[in-house]
Length: 409
Ligand code: PMT
Image 1 (cartoon, rainbow, N blue to C red):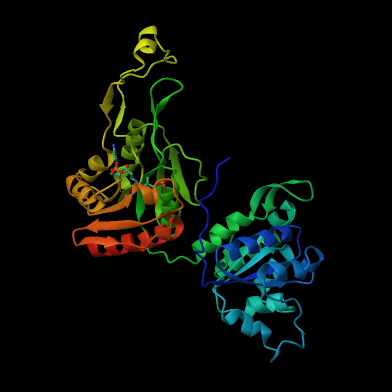
Image 2 (image 1 turned 60 degrees about the vertical axis):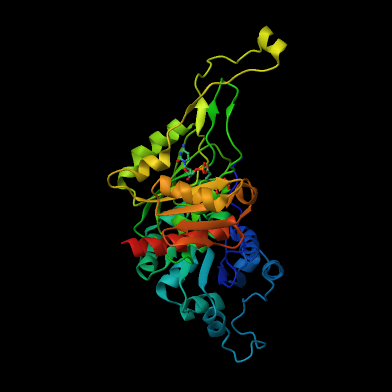
C-alpha cells in the first residue's frame, strides 16, 4: 500500500468553516475535521437539521473543539448576529456533503436556516463537495444548479464515481476526506507558480545486477513528493519522474515510474522540451553494473574459497547536467546530498553542472527523514534555511523558486 506525504501543521493560522448537510457521507466529515485539526486549522462546523440525523453535533463539537452552529434562533448567541460573526474570520467555507437540496438552495440564494444563511452572509471563498444518488446528480435540475454555482465562483469538488450507499454505482459519491484535505490546502495556497511547467526527478534509482539484486540508495522520496505536491498546489503543471518509492501520487501531478538511471534519463528527455523548470531531487545512482545477469548469480566454488567477488561498474548519464546544457534549457535546480563539506561540495556541483540554484543537505539531516535542513546556493552566495518538516520546507522552496523565476524573467 502506498502512503501519502504526511501533513505537517501547514494549515496553522487558517480557519475553515465546514457546513455539513443531510447525507450519509456526513460521517466522512468527522474524519475530515480530524485531518484539518491535525494540519493545524481552526475548524468551525455548521450543520443543517437534516445533517444532525446522520451525525450528532456532539461528534463535531468534540472533534473541532467548538460548539456546532445548527440553530438560527439560539438566544445564547450574543447579539443574534451569529451568521455574520462566524464567517468574518473564516479563510474558506466548505459544504460537505452538499446534498441536492442544499445545492438548489445555494443556487437560488435562499437563507432559511443557519447554514444557508452562513453561505449567503460569507465574505470568503466557498467550495462544495456534492454527495447524492447518481440519478439525483445527473438530473437536469441539479446540473443547472451546479452550473449556476460555478458561475457564481463556487468551487465544485467531485463528486466521484463509485459504489453508493443506496447500492447503485455511478457518479455522486462524495470525495474521500483525505482528498478534501488536499483540495482545501490547495485552495488556500497562493498560485505563485501558475504557468510554470515543472519536470522533476525524485526517489532513488535501482540498478539491477541480476533478476533479484541491484544497487540502490536510501532516498525515501519524501522530499521530492512533498515538493511535487507543493509545486502543484502553487499552480504549476508538474511531471514527476519517480524512482521506486512507496508514496501516493500527489493530487494534480502527472507521474511516470522508472527504475534505473537510464530509464529516468529517457523519461526526462521525452518531457523536457516544454518544461520551464527542471528540478533534480532524485538520488540517481552514479554507477550501474556493467553487466546484468539474466539469471540469479550463483556463488562459485572459487568465490567461496576467496570469500570475495568483484563487481565491474560503468558510469550512468548525469541527467541534471544534460538538461542544464540543452540549448533552450529550463531553469535548473539541483540537489546535493553530502556527508561532509556541504558548502564546498554543493557549490562545486552547482558550478560544474552550470545551475542557477542548488539545494544542499547533509545526508544525516535529510536522507530518509521527515524533516530536513537545507542551504540554498546561487550566484549571490549561500542561504541556510532552518530545519523544517519536509512539507513545510517544500512550501518554503516554492517561494524561493518563485522569487528567482520572477527575477530571471
Ligand atoms: O528522498 P528523501 O529520503 O526525502 O531524501 C531526500 C534527498 C536527501 C535524497 C534529497 O534532498 C537530495 O539531496 N537529493 C539529491 C541526492 C543526490 O544524489 O545528490 P548528488 O549530489 O549525487 O547529485 C547532484 C544532483 O545531480 C542531484 O540533483 C541529482 O538528482 C542529479 N544527478 C546526479 C547523478 C546523475 N547521474 N544524474 C543526476 O541528475
